Structures are given as C-alpha cells and as structure tokens.
Length: 301
Image (cartoon, rainbow, N blue to C red; front, top):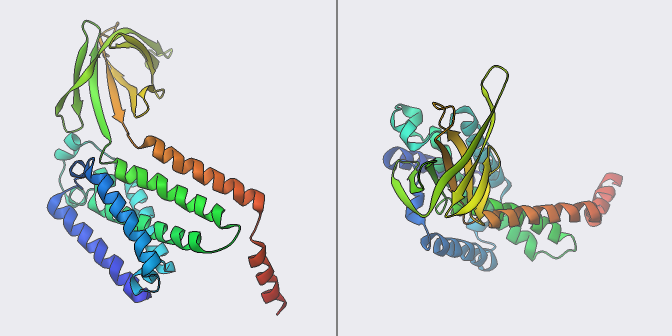
C-alpha cells in the first residue's frame, strides 16, 4: 500500500508540474458559478459513495492510509514554504519576469497547478478520514468530526471560492465620482456604483514621512470611512481597502481603493467556528477513556 501511495502522489506531482509548464496557472475563472458548485457536489457525493459502498477497496484504503497523510501535509507545507520564499506578484508584474521559477508558478503559487492539485489531495484525504470517524460509534467522535470537518470546510471554501474571488483596484477622485476599476490583469471593469473622495487626512512622523492615513469617501451617496488595515464592509462578501493615495500633492486629489469580493467568506468562518466548537469539546470531555484504559492495560502487560 505504501508503494502504491508513493507512486500515486509522484504521478500527481509530475502531472501538475507538466500542466503548469504547458498551460500556466490554474484557470479558476473557467470554474466560476455554477460550474464550481456542480463539481463540488459531485466531488463530495463521490467521496460519500465510495466510502459507504467501496469501503474495503484498495482505492479507499489508499486515501485513508498514514502514507497519504504524510504526502498531503508535506505537499501543503512545501507549498507554504514556496509562498514564503518567493514574493507573490500580480499578473502584470509576473509578465516582466522569466525563468524556471516563473514557469513553475512560484510567484503566484496559490493559483498554480502544483498547489491546486496538492490542496485537492489534502481535501480528499481529510474528507475521507472525517467520513470514517463519523461512521464509527463513540461518544467522542463528534469532537473529531467537528475539528476535521471544520478544517475541511475552511480549506474547501478557500479552494472553491478562488473561482469566485475578485480583486479590483480603483482610483477614487476628489473632483468627480467614478465607477471605473481594474482587475489584477489590467482589464477595465465598470462597477454598478460610483465612488468619490470627500476628505483625505495624512498623519506624518517628525521626519515628514507618512505615518497613517485615512479617507472618507462616498459610495453612491453613502458615506464610508477607510483606514489602512481597517476595511469597510460594503456587503457580506465585499470589502473596501485603502491602499494608496496621491503623494505628489499636499492635499491628495485621489486615493486608490482595493475592492475584494469573497462570496464564500462566511462559509470559511463557519469552518473556523466548527473547529473552535470541536476544541471546546476536546477540552471539556478530556481524553478518550477507552483508549486510556487500553494503554494502561498494555503498559501493565
């Protein structure tokens, strides 16, 4: 079983590298709603079916094996290491670079085939072990299920939500309202609402460099206050961030607002709440008494 697991993940790794080199980054936009929801339902239904009906098959045992845990966690940790070592750039910035690391998607690794395939493997493995524990009897199974299902849901929302997530940058002017924004690829997008800068304040250090800045803007006539690292929540899935401003003028005539749309953000939060509930049950219930008793018997023998 260990050899088969190793061969499977080596094959997946090689295929993901080849796909990355040939096709470039993973086409999240292609899997936008409703295709992402349909594929997600097929994926979850498939995991439930194969575990319930084909539990003793070699395929299911492979995805439940400890070797699968080592591979999926190692793949994810390696991906996080790549993200930490390489600056994550926009599509326009990457266009001016070349080399093997660009071909492998290291400068925008979360959207590379290598990272996506690794995360898909981790989610499949995590879903299978969660199903296995959910079908086993025992009072303490729910804390395991809540912890692992919550982690699965948080990762799943980030994975599937990437197809719907959108980041826009918009110059907001003092002189007139505007609804023209730009994607990370530089494509012009027209919003259904207009933004206009009302006031802008910059606080400086004694040496004259900017220390803090904030802006009051109008969103279709509705006032909104923006500060650095303090986004304005326009809706449950849309946040506005203040990212830059007109540094050439003593009285800035415009600021740059970043608009981030994350439709599955609250699904991710639900997963985090489930993990917190599972951790509370773990603390309140204590260790599994049956396992502790078995350990004591083994020790006495």
